[in-house]
View 1: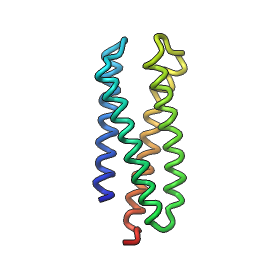
View 2: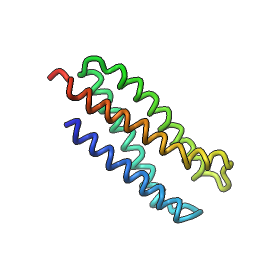
View 3: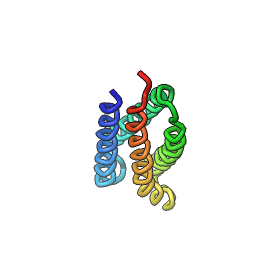
Length: 128
């Protein structure tokens, strides 16, 4: 069960990056359909990650590292979402926001990959 969620989150991240690249290549003003799909996929990934971490951390002994990594990934996710909202919502976003939104997704991906690894490891230790 956890393995399928991890795979689903990996697919969602691929879709987030794919739609983000598509959105950036489409230029401004942003295509509403692509932007909406990008935001909904991101929301689904965050929600699935939160639910999965919550469930595994309750069932797996010694999941403190998982919780700490999840908090770090959550902070990066929040930063990515906030900068993305500013970049898409403002006619001329501050250059720092554009730069942050260009690089924060990669940091978020790395932090989430660590969480997914820890989820997988913790799922192997879960009390059934």
